[in-house]
Image (cartoon, rainbow, N blue to C red; front, side, top):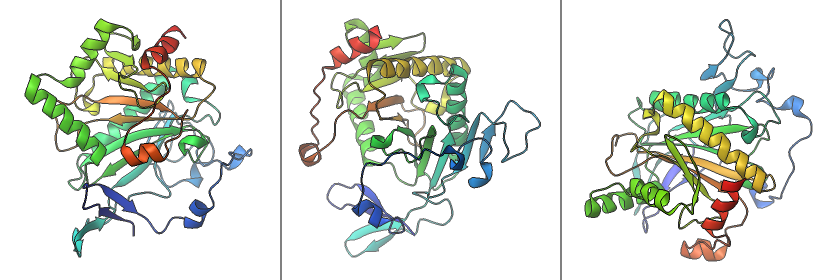
Amino acid sequence: MPEFRRDPVIGRWVIIDPSRNFKKVMHSSEEEYPKDTSKCPFCHGNENMTRPEILAYSNNPHRHPNSKDWTVRVIPNNKPVLEIEGSLKRRGDGMYDKMDAVGAHEIIIDTPQHHQRFGDVNEKQYENVFSAIIERIKDLRKDSRLEYILAFKNYGISANAVFEHPYSQLIAMPIVPKRVREEIAGAENYFKYRERCVFCDIIANEIAAETRIVQENDDFIALCPYASRYPFETWILPKGHHPDFDSISQKELKNLSKMTKSVFEKLYSVLDNPSWSALIHTSPLKEKNLQYYHWHIEVIPKLTKTAGFEWGTGLYVNPVLPEEAAKYLREA
């Protein structure tokens, strides 16, 4: 079974999974997606090629589970990073700490259409995808073993998207990842000093400066961060203070769908169909209603490669000014 192992120097947890195909990793190469889409397990009519669905949305009130006529479908990952069954079995290994890799790993199939890019789906489809994620977060909150849920999406081979068919993922973990914990700690330190949410201050500052804003509506703002790590990195943030993604209202959900669709339309317009990753950073499951944290979506086009300098120092070299990136996207 896969297991979590803790780095004793910086406190980072990693997942070791010897069941995966290590020979494929050793001989990895840039591949193309299969041309034959008839064998895609995410397409309409191939529901029997996946594990039984957890959740599905349909316009057909008489639809049977695991059949056609769905708009969004949630299934367990066939090769999960974390398994829902079992207990953590926290234990020592000499000076080290480890535990079994218990959690949940689910696939959200964004659309029945195999070749539909995420930027081309309509606003209602975005709303359905976000609703499915919210529904799954609320359900997984009930599991006392879980500490954090990351919902994310990879698009394109360079972003390690296994399937060409549009899909998102949700991984529920028994730990709060170090990257998330550092972000929360930074926000908490800012709040202790200023008595304000750092994300709320960022939004106010960017609205005043205007130069890094991509777009905004009544409830959300899209911007290229001041210290962007990657070219055309774009964040979507709620204008009101919301620490928990699954607490947004129906009105906000509709405006989030409009904003997200617009951001991806702009990215596709300015860039040449790039691979990208998008992720939702939200509060840990057992730390709701934080005064100092603010959920947000980070969209990261894969235009540059992380190499030795970045891995060795944690510093990123971004060849594109965020102000220039925002200008291109704003005018698209």
